Image (cartoon, rainbow, N blue to C red):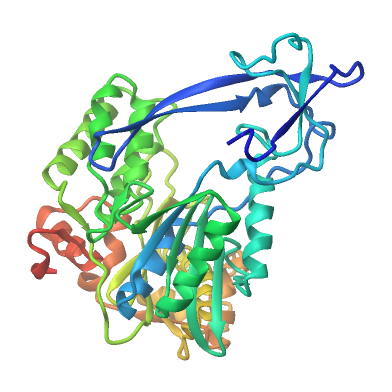
Length: 458
């Protein structure tokens, strides 16, 4: 692929420029079930020796957010669209570099008689600091040339429209593309053009993407098989658990709580983490269910505990959003300040939920899923709801941070609507505190997490 893409050119070693080393990285690639797939060798650049301003400038590149991916899957499930996956081969070798980069010849592939010569890169190699940005610029330019519109709020989301009708939706995650749409002719034409432009593999219907299976997007068991290797290292262990929260909101609070002690973990924390593992082992066949709903309406839930962190007396915010029948976003986070009132903790949590609701509404607008009515966000604390609706600053609320009053602005703009709900129906309760078994199981069901074998119970 390096030779085919004309990635490099052999030249004499420059006297005034640094030459960067390269190395081979070998990997045994596995299938979704853990079985052996193939052996891969990749030539990577020792980018730690690159100098900013000389060898590279900007490196930032966006990747698809997991909540965006869940939103697309929920949309496709509602519309009864198939979701396809495309894999670009050697994606980083497709973009011409703007900088002058010189690298050593790869080990084992030195040109006989020219061992002292070096390679000047025409295109990016893996591990080069600017390689991801260069690839994104390449694919972004090409998709826009195919009459796709890029979402303003999500730069990795591309939509092809026919007036107000959505024909095709593409989500870009580095070199993996998720494609869905209702017009099979447009979809087939898109695949054909992509194959002409890039070396790629059409993986067909999405079956395994970012650690999730297509069957109700259950978190893949292969992620759990690696736990035996990290039992002696608590910090790796937490990373694996955080990875699972991408499709398992029911463990979000426990994992978030454990992650706060990564810098000072002890045996008790490790025992608590193993308890989470035992729960996961007993629910390996559980995942999120995406199905057709009567209406694709965005609904939010927000909650907080009261000074749940005994070390610093800070509270935990939690919020979740459903689109139709599916849960598409959830968050658990310790608040950055110590609240003086219970109403303040709830108000802080609600403000975070409002910001997320605004972003989700913008993405849905790009997908032609206009939310005509204000997005309802359910809160089980009446005082917080009253503060959001009342423009008068009372003595007890005058210390509230001014940025929290975005709730009032969005209420007045009819973008969101903070609504009181019964504590028993507050789904976000599972994201802010530890619960008893019956309460936990009830809220897990309301989250949409269910067993594949018993999905009719959802």
